[in-house]
Image 1 (tube, rainbow, N blue to C red):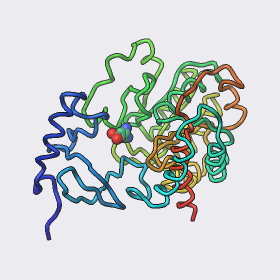
Image 2: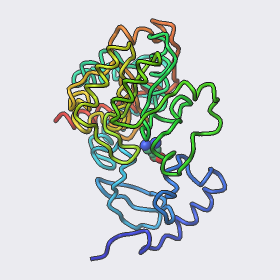
Image 3: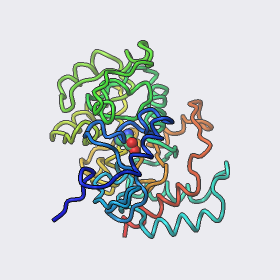
Image 4: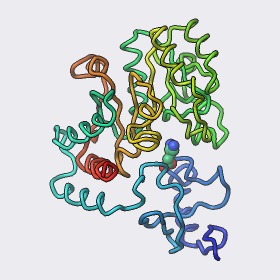
Length: 325
Ligand code: HOZ
């Protein structure tokens, strides 16, 4: 049996495109992990995908275990998503005005995650996590955030401290460019170390304890049984908000995400990936009491020209409908 591999295939066209790309993008890519540095070899250039398979620019076929790093829970180019996006596209791609599809997707999310009483759609998980940090600080009137080594919450300044994902893959230290004064407000401890969390939370006024409920970005790490309920207790006792970054786990480890799987309700949640079905969608949300601090009902500012745009909502709606079926 022939195992398709970049090492066994002709990839002249991919190599040519990558050579051009290196002249235009740092490392030839628009997101670091795509450069293959963590796994070695030459990146191939994707041309098309269908289901579990992807074809490169040279026509080689692969089984795709990456699936766009998570959004493609239905595989590449599922007909249900393509049909819905094509239909909605005819009606206009962005309005800068509210649309009904935003409400429908928020309803679907709330139906499976009742703690997401209100949400705000963004275009990336980074924006969602960044906005949660701002909201948690505003609500609690505290500045410190506790995160866990190897957890990745996007690339906002507050989270590039002992981060996972591409930061860990490339072995980068905490990123230059993040002001030291800001980095000092992000505390870290080892995942599953409840004693350390308890000590820090009692010594330092934490705005938020934030985690990937199952770590996908620092290798695969499951929480120990007492960890997540323990975090809930510590947050309640010390006045910190408990924040789940469910960008990877949401609608994946259970339809209701980690909150359903572990039976613990967070105060705020970040979602992404699956809720856009391959189009750029993320969201953050929680109870009305917290979310009404966001502008325009409250003073915490956050906005986005393409947030909740109809194509993105169509991708998410079609995907979640299919998962529900
Ligand atoms: N931060 C993403 C993975 N967790 C990067 C995905 C990509 O490069 O497409």
